[in-house]
Image 1 (cartoon, rainbow, N blue to C red):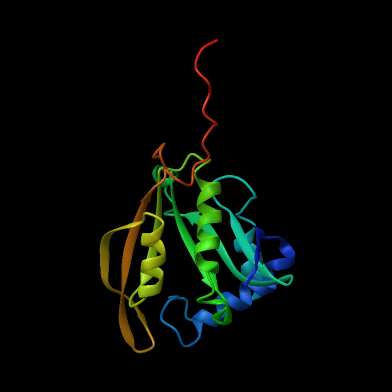
Image 2 (cartoon, rainbow, N blue to C red):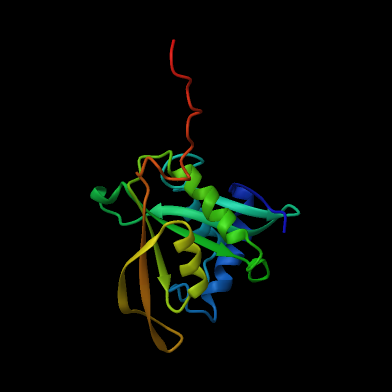
Length: 183
């Protein structure tokens, strides 16, 4: 799939909402229990910008949104402002086509330019595909919240993965061209 990745706009919200809602019903990977109405998605989107810590990107296939990535506040206390939570959500038909890595890479390339120290991924278990995706981008496991969520008549644990965003050698960080020595 030759998708285009760009910043989300208000016009993308119905598609973003439909994709996210598909993970609420019948799946454990979102701990939301009820689908989001579009008005709630609009409120959510109002907190994002095209620059800064909190961004939303979309993947388009033939001008149709097939996935999105976002960076959100990790927690709502000011001391956590240098940390973000990253999320990748794809339409079922778009999984396994390489869009997850492309979306996450695009998001991380933007986030390394911001004053962010750590990025976190919280992954409802089991989800080996998401774990492998995040490991590919230098996220490491830092803990598990055991049976923290209840959905579909069962308890589910959440893996916490962390990525150092302030490493000057980060491959996502743009690097200046080498300068010739001398004068």
